Length: 98
Image (cartoon, rainbow, N blue to C red; front, side, top):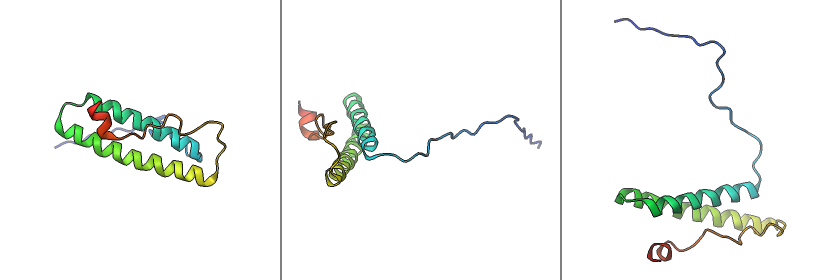
């Protein structure tokens, strides 16, 4: 059995990630976006397993979002952005039944 190995030249790193510190406001915004995506996925899910998956994901993201808002309140961040004006944390049951 023959095995061939190739070596690529001029290879770039596949994980060019930004390791700069993330601010609390950035974390809140990313969590809000993830929560909106999870709600959209839940709305379009047809399979029972996918529905369950989105329910658990939404629940976890709600907990994370609430925790981040509590941290922001503890740090007394400036209220000029109004972080919780469009809060995606809403009861899942109300979302399902409406």
